[in-house]
Amino acid sequence: MKEVALAARHKELNAKMVPFAGYNMPVSYEGVNIEHQNVRENLGVFDVSHMGEFLITGEHALELIQKVTTNDASKLVDGKAQYTVMPNETGGIVDDLIIYRINAEKYLLVVNASNIDKDWNWIAQHNTMDATMRDMSDEFSLLAIQGPKAAKAMQALTDVDLSNMKFYTFEVAEFAGIDKVIISATGYTGSGGFEIYFKNEDAEQIWDRVMEAGKDFGIKPIGLAARDTLRLEMGFCLYGNDIDETTSPIEAKLGWITKFTKDFINSEALKKEKEEGPKRKLVAFELEERGIPRQGYEIEDEDGKVIGEVTSGTMSPSLEKGIGLGYVPTEVAKFGNKIFIKVRKKSIPAIQVKLPFYKG
Image (tube, rainbow, N blue to C red; front, top):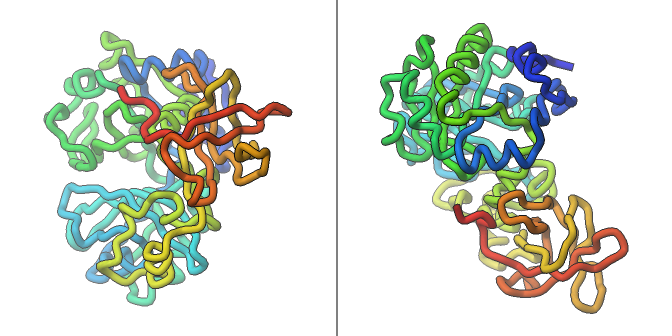
């Protein structure tokens, strides 16, 4: 089991540590609901250093990225980031990731912790153009500082104008007394904030300065459990739950990051699927009665026929009702349509809704 650079800080804070993607990670400190609401109302700091970071460089860097991802990375300019997925050859998804363009021949790819080895091998396998690849996952730490007060609280730590940073842009600058930190206006919570990338050896200094700067703004450390409830309230996909090797980006409603203006792995088949329409779609639902939908629970139609299953579900701390995502046949997937979630032995009615669940 790997330890993140900040493991000692989490243990000092009495975090509940659990194995996750090969790392010992903090799942909670004070409790999911407290941590969740603090991010929605103030700000919180997540240690997500288990994420993977690959550097792709050289004159063929963009060519490789264009081949293995669905979004159009040629639209990126220096200092801009992009959400995308890597498709496999059978209609599914290898992983979802964020691409950062540092310059025309230098890109940072941030991938899911559980997929680091798989992603590296997949990209390397398709690197027929000899782009230079470097896996920096074990060298870097990553903090997500999220919440409406994040910009104000963190402004004391940098000269970068945080309040005016546009979503999905980044700067490489001094932060908390450390040079060459990537400050990125990205996140997985829907409440604004930043993700900060830095070398492992600077982790404790940055953590301590972040906690100190946020003290007057109500900062709290936040675990992976609240990260999951926050992302689900926004309807953001989680790899391994809502998207995986068997789900297509078209089914998962990720057509907006699937650009057929270029060729990429399996692009012809995905284009055909988009034109003909997928057989199933990922839908969002809210329970109409008390209950908590969980991953794997069956989705039924009004006749009690099983038509799908829940991919992500929880009791929403913000809405105080059961919410979830799941795949159903396309003909059933319609806003306002009723479906039923089998919670234990009871079929609970649910209504399909537009995302996000949490409107802020």
